[in-house]
Image (cartoon, rainbow, N blue to C red; front, side, top):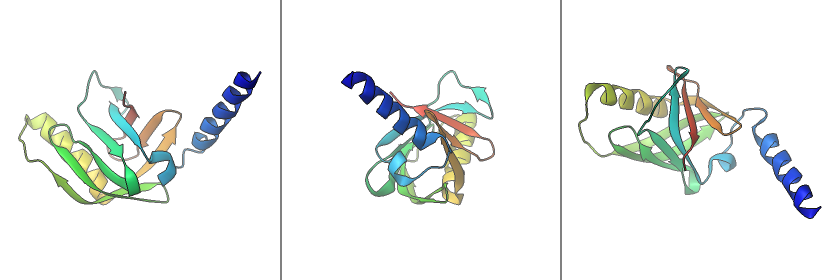
Length: 132
């Protein structure tokens, strides 16, 4: 009975946090996300990832290069300041997607959290799944 009660309480907490879609620092802290969809189309694989660590520090892979910066979340809009990154050159398509992703982070992008999906409501819309 205790297991069932704990399972129900945990489920209610998780669904309660994500039902509105609004995102806060606590929900993102210590999470790691992998890009899964671009403009509604599922990707077979992607190197693009983002991780939120202590004090909204952000790091990840833009597709070609590793990046890091200082995240700020205001009214469910994520902005990453002081982005630093490695400087490798990849194929044009990978470089273009990386520039698009990092530009979203630099300018600020509205984000939603629905179930286990982190959504960047930019152009194009990017969907991330929890990285394993």
